Image (cartoon, rainbow, N blue to C red; front, side):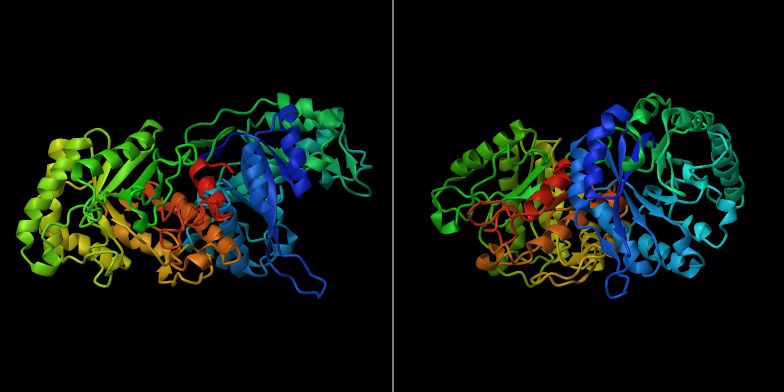
Length: 592
């Protein structure tokens, strides 16, 4: 589906301009703020280095907090194509809903470099429908610029610079004639001729610049700017923008506000109040509730419903068998209170049922799996009956594919897992036909996970499974450097491509992903890579959102507390770990 911009935007260059834009948005009728987030400037030593601005993330939050749509823009030089492509990835990871590439004379003749940028961005998961090309308005006269090459990437739209600066401040040409030349003869006419020869024609979203620069800066008056708006109105754009907040005379604000936009025709509309669509109940957090009577288990304080505002799911193990001092009835009552408290606040539970729930006779040590599968199914039935209509989903077993998971998992061959899984699923569905059942979180490599699921499925005469849980630890989003304690096994985009293609007919849930540190003292040290982990978290959610929202509908971060393998968004004292804590809630709430 195409993505259509609808509204009015204003460009900003600095952090101060972002503040000004958010303050003046209402009188201008502005709905989108286009914030500069990167460039490749020349430093004192004469070297140019690609830079992502320090204020870019906070600017995005400021724009969103003002109820406006955040778009990013980058001044392109194509000196370091891969690094400049990474700026695009960073902007999306920070929550910008689109990225504009400002392509001017600095990019003359750099067609090969443009192709490298395109290939890097697309191969790293950038959605071309959210990338825009800011071009000269007389695009036919700039054949040396790589606009044709960039068309593969910039499918969101064309934003020609239909500025007044193409005329001197002391020109004798009247405003109406200026506007006719720049808007009609250049911007729209050359747009039609240029793209008629290409296979893809992007949407048109002109940018107006109400000022002259030569021989001196002069802002247009309301009488001078009205003819520009009149010429633009004849083309009925659904979106246009103004460069820039610091070059717009306040007398123009009512004219901009009163401009009547064209009506969007189909597509997904990026309008006021819009944010990147998310499926309901998309985000979850892993918890480890223990009864307070079990001090040996390092009780974790559960987050309150207020703390989990915006979180759709809580995932935890029903740990009945590891709490020998509690009866099954006491365990059901204890976990029932947790389930019901979260459910009342709209937070669903994914409850894991495994050996920590029902130990039985321990067939992993003593054999006789058939006996265990029968008894486990009966146990599961009782739990599902008790939690009917209360627990939204169950996961059967956890990391059963892990042959080296002593202490955290019990390995089961696909044949054994099939014999455990099918009776348990049938018991749940018979007791609660609305409950979902998740295939126990597999934790191997992408193809190994696919093979394990396929082998298990082939051994079952029924497949009443609603989703497959996976744990892609060590799979890194594009542009994120390796973090100590999290070995880089591969790229997250490649992992998700393999598992979604290999299992095309069932949703994939990421039931665990995070950065286990294990050493609590390190995990609690705010100097120990918290910034990098926060960036990793943002990038994980951005990559899933941009490419796999439909196929990967639920993502659980591991975990809430540092008492869970040092992986928390809060430390062992239950204090938020910033910026990790903030990054998580930016993802789940869409705001800071």
